[in-house]
Length: 324
Ligand code: COA
Image (cartoon, rainbow, N blue to C red; front, side, top):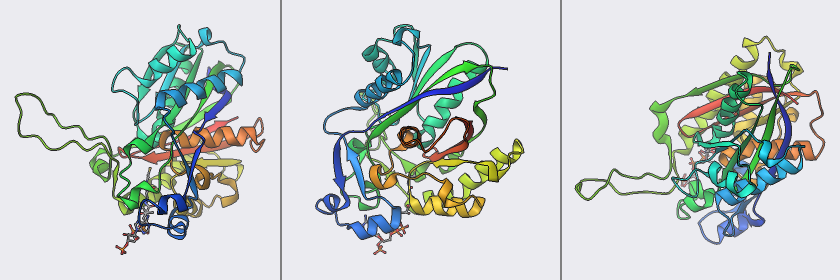
């Protein structure tokens, strides 16, 4: 059987750091509220770089950290809800920027679950023998979609990108199992970039709204219910012993959500990696940024087995059991 092994990681985060105190100068908030409600202290905002720029920088880092040449890349998948353009896709722009002329390139839109969904698609191409390798990136410049008058939302998000290279192997490693799901019925709890069906003959349309809009309480409830259920199903379906989970990388939305997930799963907090204090919620980028950071800091060792789990707009969720 063919498996998809994670052979390199990479990340790129804009260097403009905005603290909670900086936020409190433009919106009615304060460090104490943001920290106690979310665990977020800082976020990085773009200083002009768009999503394709930070995605391409990430791809370059992944290539540097691997033995692969751009011309040998089979697929590039970018997960994003903040693309530069509706078309071309961010993945096609990345392909051009890094000179990966032989790659198939396309985007996936599954918001904060986007990286997991993208990895799932890439994994299937590899497991079915269609392609030998794939670069999967989560990249977001969410700051361009924030309403800086909406204090319940704008303080939570940040910009950044992260990704991995996966390659075909006969060894039982890499992506071992997955559990994904969607609940479109609850989709209006978190929306962004609404574009009405307006044209020269239709005068009865509603207004466009590019900003992120969120019912924070509904999302909090959804995350604390769906993620433990998803991880439980993931591990139970493959009879994996919870005590053998070396690490968990949750989507970096909110420290309080992570604490509840830990409690419900009875997996201790010290196995959960968190860096939302530095980056805020970077949507599809949060899991690969954290994974790259753990690899760079030597927190994850070869052979470790862990869970990566995301949730967000759609509504969507997805968990994977991965061996490094
Ligand atoms: N600074 C200060 N006060 C704020 C504030 C801010 N940035 N944002 C909201 N408040 C106020 C509210 O206006 C409200 O005031 P009121 O009681 O006078 O009306 C009060 O704080 C409590 O607001 P509430 O929305 O009930 O707070 P909460 O405890 O539910 O926390 C969130 C709000 C958004 C932090 C929380 O619901 C959450 O984390 N939800 C999940 C969001 C998420 O992770 N989204 C991304 C998913 S991918």
